[in-house]
Image (cartoon, rainbow, N blue to C red; front, side, top):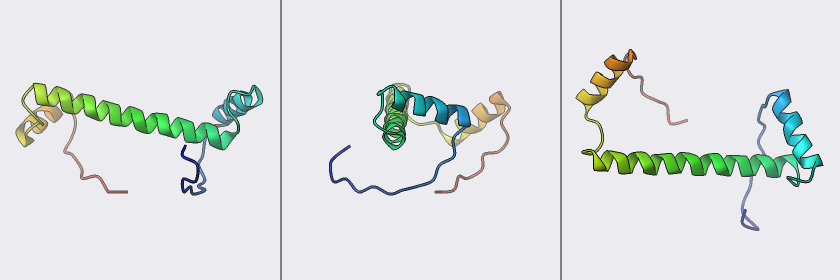
Length: 90
């Protein structure tokens, strides 16, 4: 985290077991506090998503580019998935 980086307090819900495990890590000195652990975990998850996105983009580029609408329909039918719904931007 960059010193002076803007931050915002939010409320999240975790399983009690997860919270217990995080607190145990903090108690063992593996994380400075619960918030620091969660910030780190979110950063790792965001990097992971970005990494998978780059990997997928590279794979698609090597195999002919993004799926066409017809290819998506075929894949959905092959996988037994119903019609796609548009996702909200939330």
